[in-house]
Length: 531
Image (tube, rainbow, N blue to C red; front, top):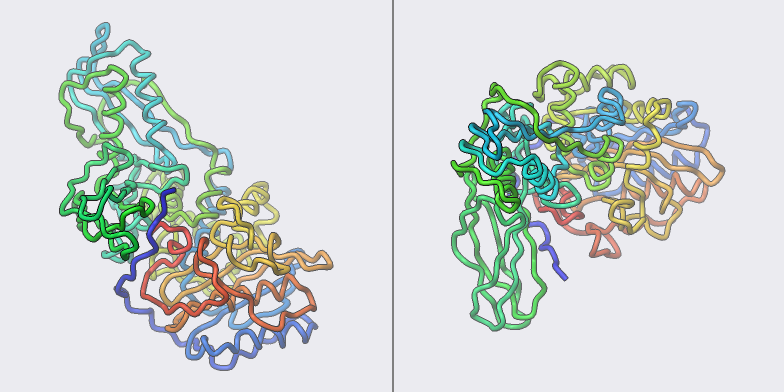
C-alpha cells in the first residue's frame, strides 16, 4: 500500500497582520439568547489558556429565525483561511449556476486533407480544474476517430481563458512547490480523482537491499520534470528521510534521503510550472498512443487569437458535483478556478480582480455589509483576506433560501464521518460525540489561524448556524476549542465536561491536540496529506 509522508515543517514566511482585537476576557458580547447555560459554557471554552493574547470571534444563530444565541466579537476582522471557500463556492453556485460545466476543446488551426491536418492542432482550455489524463486520452481517441493521423505543425496549448497571473495576491513564494499552492491557468491538469490541480505525483519505492537506489515514478509519466540527485535504500527499520522538492520557477526536482528496505512506497505531490504546456505534453503523448503524429513535437503556448475550427470537446461534471472535493478536501486550486471563471462568465475577464468583484457583490447581498472586510483570492490561502464571524454566519443563513443549498450543505465536511469524501477535513474530529454525523462545517487553518463555520442540529431539532474563528495564537493548534464549541451546540443543554480530542491527522488520531504550531501556512494540507 502506498503511503504519503506527513507535511514538512516550513519556516514562517509571512508576518501576522497587525490586530487590535485581543481576546482579553472571554466573556461574550450581549447575546439575544436567554440561555445562560449556553453563554457560560461557551465563555468557559473561550477562556482556554491557549487563547491568551490571541483573537477569537464567534457567532451562533438560530438558522431559521436568525436570532443570535451567542456572540463574542462577531464584527472582528479575522483571517478566514479555507473557510473562505464557503463564500467562493456559494457565489459560484449562485452566479454560474449549479449546472455550470467547464468545456475543453480540441480545434484545428489549418486545413484537413484526408488524414493530414496541414497546420496546428489546438488544445483549448475552458478552465476545467477537474481535467484528468484519461479525459485527454478520450479526446485523443476522438481525434483519431476523425481520420486525422498526421499534424504537420505544432500542438498548441491554450490557457488564455484566464489571465497569465499564476499566483494569488499575498501567496507565500516558498509555498510554490507544494500541492496546495498550484498555478492557475485556463488549461490545467489534475492527475488524481480528487482534482489536485497542476500537480505531478512522485512515488518512491525502496530497492531490494540497503544501498540500492530507490525506484521513482511520475504520474502522469509525461510530466516535464528534470530529476537531480537520488534517493537511496536504507537498512531495514531505519528512519525515512526521503524527500522530493521542486526548485522554484523551474520543473526540476531535487531528490535526497533514503527509504528503508521493505517500507511501503511514499508519494510526494509537487506543482508543475506552466500548467497549459504541461497539459499539452500529456495530450501529445495520448495522441501518439492513438496513432496521431504531430510532426513538430514541441508543445507551444497558444496566443488565444488563432483562427480555428472545433473538432472534439470534453465537458466536466456540473458545478454541484465539483464543489464536493473542493469543500470536503479544501481544494485550493478548484476554488481559484471558480473565482476566475466567475470573472470570465460575469464580467468577460478571467482574472482575480473581476472574479472577486462579483463575489463581493454576491456577499454584500447575502450577509451583513459592515464592516466590509477584504477578499483577494478564492481559497483563503492569502493572509490579506479578512472577514467577520457575523458575515460568515449571515451567509450561512441566507444560503438556506437558495435553490442550490442542499447540494452545498451536503458538500460541507461532516464531523466524525470516516469517509474521505464525506467527512473530509473533519473525518477524524468529534468522533463519539453528539456532533458526529451532525455538524456540517468548513474548516480553515494555517499557522496561527484555526476556524470552523457551518451548521449543527440540537437534540430538540433546532438548526443552528455558527462561526468560530481563532487567530494569532502561537502555541498548540487549538482544534479542540473549536470542536468543544460544536459539541456543546450539538449536545443542547448537556454541556460536555471536557473538551473533545482534536487529532491533527485523518490517519493518526490522538487523545489531544498538543502539537506545536510549526509555521506551515496551510494546516488543512496536513490532514489531507497534500503537502
